[in-house]
Figure (tube, helix red, strand yellow):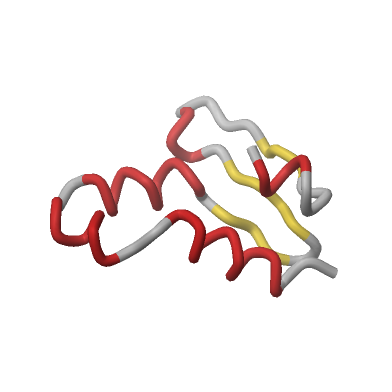
Length: 62
């Protein structure tokens, strides 16, 4: 996953996979919950790109 490899993030695993987190700097991201939310609606999927999400996370890398 780019958040871990390229931004130096770390996985924080949880019992439920969808609650697993990626920590980048002082920020925590919930990639599985975010993806599930955007996949629930076809229009939301078209409106939002994972590339945009990656660039947002990249800004918060410290």
